[in-house]
Length: 150
Image (cartoon, rainbow, N blue to C red; front, side, top):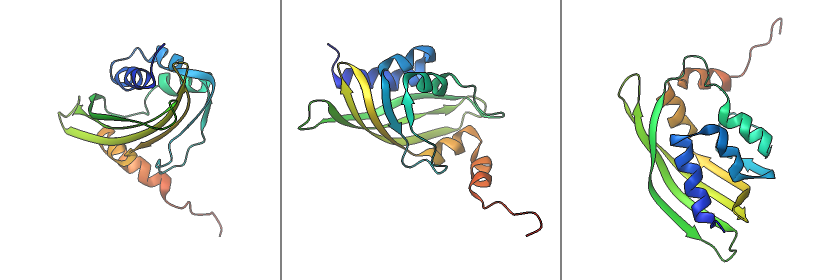
């Protein structure tokens, strides 16, 4: 059987290397994945189908390509054999500019029978938006919208 550590490593390496179509297969059919630090507070991903869409969606228009690797990986086992806490960073270079970037991450994951059933992914989304050249878009999305006629 695949250990939680092995499943986590398959995920973070797969996010960098692909194939992206296979990443959703690391999750249970019904799951619960959140990104608590995402500035736009997206809804949880609750199914393997939603995760497949998440991993295979085309990048936003104008987004730069990130060549990255997971580095500094530390996996903490807990008293619950299904739960791990993984500290790491995605580190690499922007393909179009050569600019270096680092995105620190902490994942708190429940992995049962080799499949992710729950994950709270604490990622530095601002560093990611900056590296992808999407920081202005993120800031615009965070600004309050002006009402017409008000």
